[in-house]
Length: 116
Image 1 (cartoon, rainbow, N blue to C red):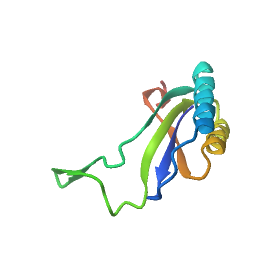
Image 2 (cartoon, rainbow, N blue to C red):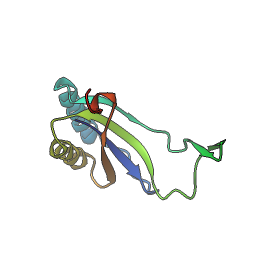
Image 3 (spheres, one colour):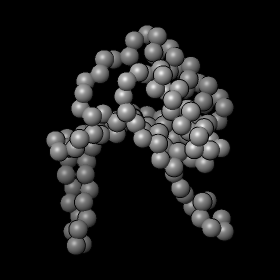
């Protein structure tokens, strides 16, 4: 089962990570990579570009989007045996980084289709 773990930014400024947090996060990422659990990770540009399609017309709007209450600013794509395992990895992440908010969503792909 694949899950996308995303960190969101509600607009609050957070302090940059200290040396201890950087070391702990590095060790956590190395552990997940070695175990084959971590498929991809990264930070996202909070400004982004919005694509809207309505009535056959596609509109492109560059951010930042002031009306957005929160934005996804980081992600980790993981492959685990269960949702509970994904939640446990997320708990470990938040124990390292401290206060914040995120979302975990299961990722489906062609191999998840019936008969695949």
